[in-house]
Length: 128
Image 1: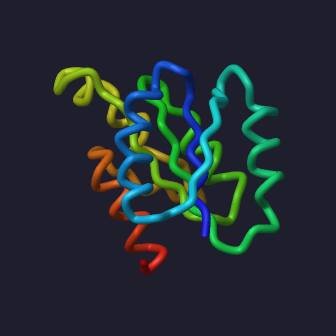
Image 2: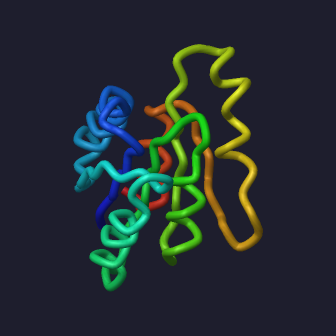
């Protein structure tokens, strides 16, 4: 059982910490990477390929604005992908949420806005 967090940039670290603190409380193993689907798609694929033979993985993607990361991960792996985009405020959320919600067919991204709820979703999916 492992959670793999992929952030679009290092500026997403404070948002990721809200998730990882809860995962630590739930005693769920996690690892964290920075790789943009727009700027470093081969690095994202490297992360996915490194974990392709694992049994129980959940990916959490953290990217705002033009969120290609969540869809890219979901389309290129067989594991659940939870998009937990960071927003600076409600206006930012209303403008940018659709880049995480609207995905092409065969690209299942579960979107959870609250970082605590994201960690709890991982806990429930893993059944711990």
